[in-house]
Image 1 (tube, rainbow, N blue to C red):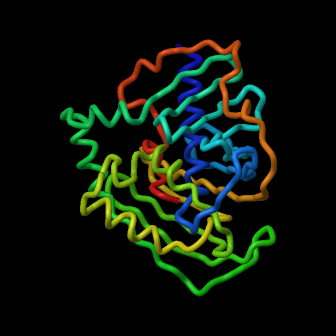
Image 2 (image 1 turned 180 degrees about the horizontal axis):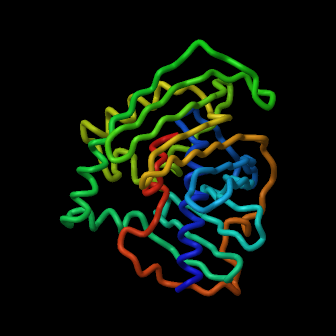
Length: 265
């Protein structure tokens, strides 16, 4: 299962990059064949034994689905379908894919291990501090927000959000993080408190810098949105190629964006 291990590790990184770029915002209506395209530069540093990295990912939204795609031909893509609860991960290098159903995962939340995870996530405290600092980034007027997350992990974020961008991708990010009212924390006091803080961030994040402590190492990530546009998209972009072989994940609590230290943005 070497290919699946590589795919899983890459997925967590890719999903983290995607989530760092998504927050609450007003709605956006799209025709079925009209898609939303977002290009993001993802930078990471601080991992032990690894040089700083930089890659580019594309987020595509159409036909009621979202795809987060690596620009590496041998990279990993993720397709989200909120209607079914399916999260499909494709390893292009190995021509393999596997699917995790979020709704099925939620059915197992009564197990003691999942109850413990829910309790741990409920301990996370999020504070968002809007500032008066503004700047133009890649053509968008942005405001700076300071975000602190304490509890299971210690994370500090600097988020520059453009308030005039009307994007609503919550149903996709909620699926990845199991964080909506029906998610891991459900409509609990902790869940409501976390969402209330994150709603203080107005608009769409164009630049997000994050610092976190991970096993004694300071991990730094940065996501920068370079392009947002609407364009026609083929339905086949959101399908698994016919010659890809399906694999079983084989691990309970498979890696999803909810496992990544991203919270909401």
